[in-house]
Structure formats: C-alpha cells, structure tokens
Image (cartoon, rainbow, N blue to C red; front, top):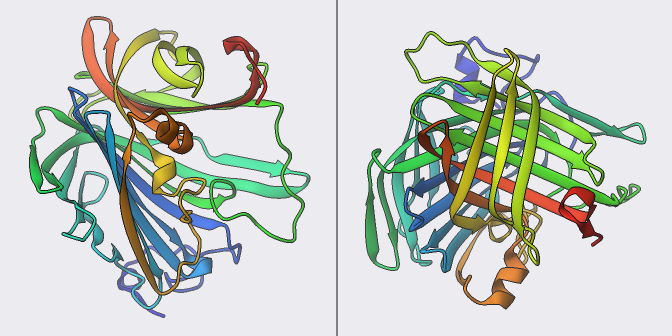
Amino acid sequence: MLTKYDEYLCHQIPSTFDHVETSSRQWTERIILHTHDTTGQLHMSNGFGLYRNRNIIDAFACLTVDGKTQYNVRASRELLPQIDEVKVGPFSYEVTEPLKKVRYTLQDNEYGLSYDLMFNGVMPAHEEDAQFFRLKGRVEEDMQRFDQVGRASGWIKVEGKTYSLDESNFYVERDHSWGIRRGGGVPETGVEPGDIPEGYLYSWGVIQFPSWGAAYHIRESWDSKPLLASGGVFYPYGTDKEDQHFTAIDHNFQLRRDLRKINSGELTFHLAGGEQKTISMRPLSFCCLKAGGYFGYRDFVHGQWMGPYFIDGFKLDLSDPAVLADVSFLDNTSCELQCDGETGYGVFELVITGKYTKYNFAGY
C-alpha cells in the first residue's frame, strides 16, 4: 500500500514504504529518548518499536521520580493500515525538523502519566559503526544506529502533579536504530537456541558537555576481549571541528555488587587524533527499562503480538529491594559528569552477566 513517504524521491528498494528489504520477522526499527534533569528528581525513558514483518508497533514510557517510584505505561497495536504515523493509542512521535527537533507526547490516560515534550538537538547526530554478527552461519544482528544529544522543553504530569521542563536544566539523549535485531524480545521457535556466554559485558552511553559530546557502544567477553567497540566525539552546531572516532574505550566502573549497577566510575576515550578524554560520573537517577518491555516484564515484551490494540500501566516502588531486584536488569542511568573542568550530563547502560574477571564476578 502507498504511504505518504512514497511521495518522496527516497526509495531504496523496488517496493512501497510499507515493506523492507527482508522478510525476516526480526526486522525492527526502534527509537528511544531519555529525558532527565540535573538534580535526579526526574528521569524518563520512552520509545517506540516498529516491526513491519509482524504487523506490530508498540510504545512505552517509564518515569522515575526522586529515584523511588517508577511509573510505567505500555501500549501496542496492529501496524496496518495506519502505517505512516508513529502513534500507539495515547502515544505519538513527530519529527518536526529532521535530525534536529522531535515532539513526543503521551495524552491523558487512566494510568496517571502524560507528557508533551519537544526535543531540540544541540549537536549533530552521531552514526555508530554498523553492527553485524553471525552465529553458526546465521545472521544474528545486522543493524544501524544513530545517537543525538539535546535539551527538552514542555511538561510531564504524573498523578495530578505537573512538572514544567525547560532547556536550561532538562537534557535528552536519544537513539534511532533499524535492522535485524534478535534478543531482548520475543524468542524464536523452531531454531537452535543461542549459546549462553560464560560471561559478557555490554555498555552504551551518550553524553554532552558545553563544548563537546560523545557516544560509545562496547561489548566484551568475560576476559575483557572486545566484541564491539564503537564511538566518537562530536561538537555543537556552528563549530568548525570535525567528529573524531575512538580508537579505544577504557572503563572503570564502581558497582553495586548485588545488582551490578553503576555507583560511580570513569571512562577514558582514546581519540583518533591521539587525544584522550577521561570523564568521571556521578549517578543522579535511573530507570528500569525491563518494565517498558526490554526482555519482558509482566506479560509484555517488545515485538509481541498483543492483539489489535493493547494498553496497560502500573507503578513500582523502587525503594523496595524485592521490587528493584525483580525489575532491574537493563537500566538507564543519568549521571553528572566531570572532564577537564567542565560539567556535563548523560545517560549510560551497563549489563554484566555471568563471569567477568575485571570486576571480580565469578558467574551467574
């Protein structure tokens, strides 16, 4: 079927925009935004996932207030025929200026969380290295992703209280990815399960200082052997500096041992031009993305058919150790950062599973 995008001269395959180049059910296109203040009072992660070969689009929002209570709304619908609008029930996402401005909203609903926010990019988007992996001859991942930093304005309302956001103290880090994506969603049937690694580290982060920003994405085996290392430095609009890729990324996290969460840490970026940048981090707040559908929680997982339309919501008491242990896995942590006399902010994800020698984890 024709969509509004078929009007433009930007086709990549001999088909309309309701199709992609492969029939793989794992084709996924996903956007996520992390909106947080500079004090740790508010941290919200929200996003959308589109699965053209499953006829599904879903959405979620998770808001943590004062590091204690997390509010969650999740929704899903059949993609066709409303294929050319990023809307799922009360959720919507609108690109108002490509690669610069995005409006993201959650209208009033029965679950007590709503918002109307504008992302304003302050630096150009950073294109990560392509991610391609095979396992036993089968493509496990074939993806592209870009990251961008910016500021937020608008409002968030939760349980009747409205918070006004302005660009002076509300930061946003976002990413947009597309391609073959296995893992973190609905398991496949009828194929050999993937191997469980002896140990594994994954970390992703996007940061912004007044005079520069950076993004990185690393994956390592239990003995710190790099499996993926992508990243680079970028600069604000209007500067003449060119982006620089990283040649190496060193990490030294201090961790909460039981949940393997970041307590503090340092990262050192080795730039292609020979310069090094070492940043220290102080966590402000966090959001447990599992509640939003990553890897599944309370019968909802990204990319799963939930019928023509589905929506639910709930809140979590993160001060309860049992609740936190149940929902914490892939967490997004907002941090205050220091580097060479500058103060910045950003978000980080860290997952360590199984054995990992550097941080003295012996197994699962």
